[in-house]
Length: 142
Image (cartoon, rainbow, N blue to C red; front, top):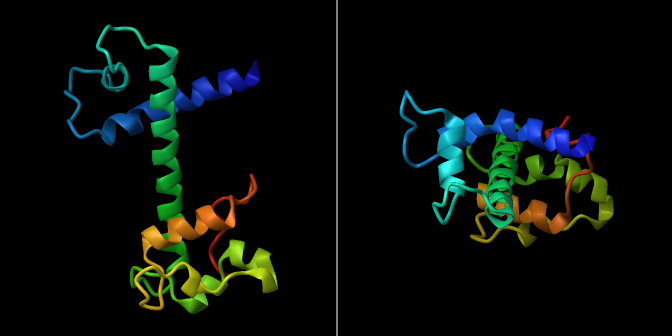
């Protein structure tokens, strides 16, 4: 039961963020939750089905994950050049944990420029596996 309450509490905290991220601005007289509800109510019947709620929730979680990955990427990019070079790559927590088994940066470098852009970084994180709970955000080299 506590998981349900935590999920609902997380949703309530995240609703304003979802409303901010919408393509259409929220009117001053409209509650951000109303805008999210309307967006998630795909058939427009004024009721969220379980499928509509799950689709909306999944979208919310994906956006939050991308936001966290973007923040991690920016922290790791020590020289602020918009990409992760080999030295920065070797400092990544996922790479350090893999040790000698870590694939080279070139494996994820789709455009072959010797660095990882954000989309390549996301692909690398997906391929190397999730960071265990409690360590998210600690990807910066030390």
